[in-house]
Image (cartoon, rainbow, N blue to C red; front, side):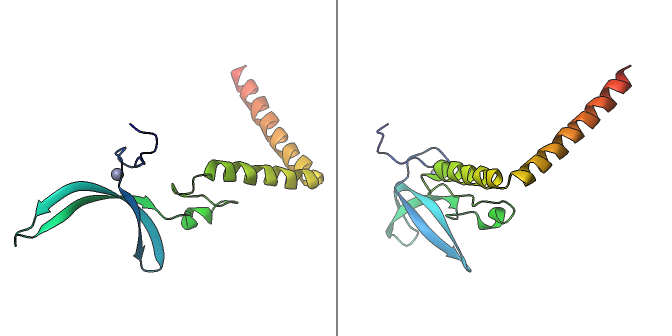
Length: 123
Ligand SMILES: [Zn+2]
């Protein structure tokens, strides 16, 4: 397979192009696979295609539950964007060290509590 060939993340087959579609106020993308031509019942020849749903550019609904935006398949540098965002978040925490120490204290106390409970039950 040529490296320039675009492969559909849904079905693993090469696609011909990406198409933007709209449903209400939401935009999403589909990968269009050409399957050759077919003759319709009234004798006309038309292109046969299969479409795979790729989702919206950004996953707005899921994103609302997170601190950062989740990107769709078409955002090619999405892993880099996630890393940048995580580094920013950690930097933010570093600036607010009091808060970070408080949170870590809570976690450590909780772990110690569970550990103690567990060890007592084993005796
Ligand atoms: Zn596909």
